[in-house]
Image 1 (tube, helix red, strand yellow):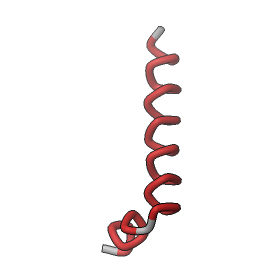
Image 2 (cartoon, one colour):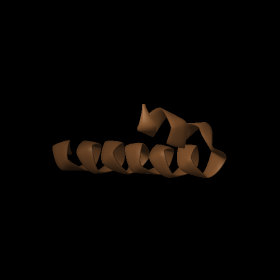
Image 3 (cartoon, one colour):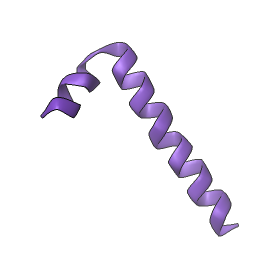
Image 4 (tube, helix red, strand yellow):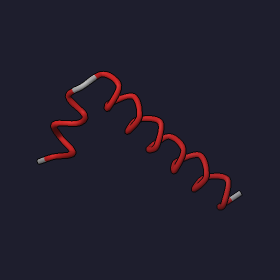
Amino acid sequence: MVNLETVNTYEGAHDVHALILGRAITGIAAFF
């Protein structure tokens, strides 16, 4: 629930989105 509250803020959502994209990019790079 705390994470959802953080995502409600623009900066929080931006940070979480950046972390998710970072993991996705590194994950894809690891496979290729």
